[in-house]
Amino acid sequence: VTNPPLDAIREELVTSLRSSLGPQGNILEPTAAAARSVTLPFPVIDNDELAKLIHINADGDMPGMRAATLSGLYRVSGGGDALAARLEQICTEVDAAIEDGARLIVLSDRHSDAEHAPIPSLLLTSAVHHHLIRTKQRTQVGLLVEAGDVREVHHVALLIGYGAAA
Image (cartoon, rainbow, N blue to C red; front, top):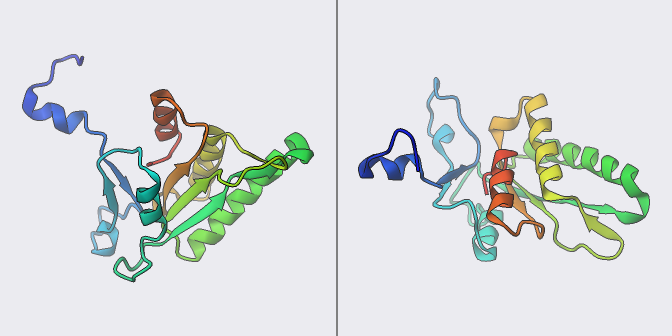
């Protein structure tokens, strides 16, 4: 329910879940490269769609659009210090990926085991998002989160609010 109420024509535009992935170009200097992005009808994607995004330029038809997958795991034996150090290391890896041409950053907690625990996805996403803002690189990349701790709609909404696009 909205206030004021929306009419049927505009409701779809205002309440759309469509999300755009990739760099955000300068709207004052429009170029073809600045318009290059991937649009998803919904921010929640399945493993097949994620695999397509990870390999987005595998056949070379999306020049300038490359994905980098970063592990969101930390060594459990190190405790909180290891978690903090890993977050700093991930931010450094994000910088290197951007410098190497990545325009989609996938933050993944796959391959966790008894020695490597996943960093909570909200903490990981917000740390990377705010690092990118501080270093003035946020508009250069889109953030995707592959996480096992996202189980409810509220979790998805929080991740979007914390900077993830999908």
